[in-house]
Length: 78
Image (cartoon, rainbow, N blue to C red; front, side):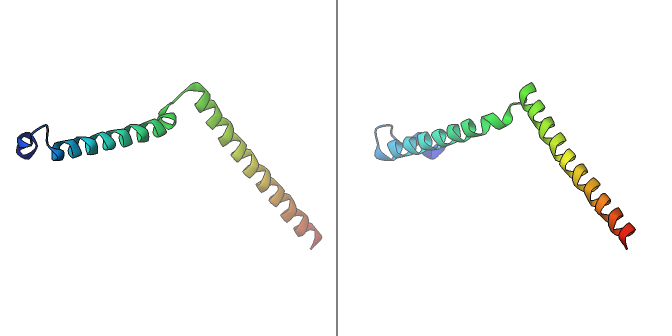
């Protein structure tokens, strides 16, 4: 803080430092804007997630059922 406060406001070092701070603030703002949609918990997002999980569980259940049926047919046939 001592170094920053001693730099005159009309110097090139001060200007360069402020430009750097501005660029970093803009980058943080952009990153927050990119992450914002993933932070919302809404009814629509929850329902969409539930549908996806149910679909995946249904697919795995169907595959397991089909595997059991094929194994049963193989056991009977042998």
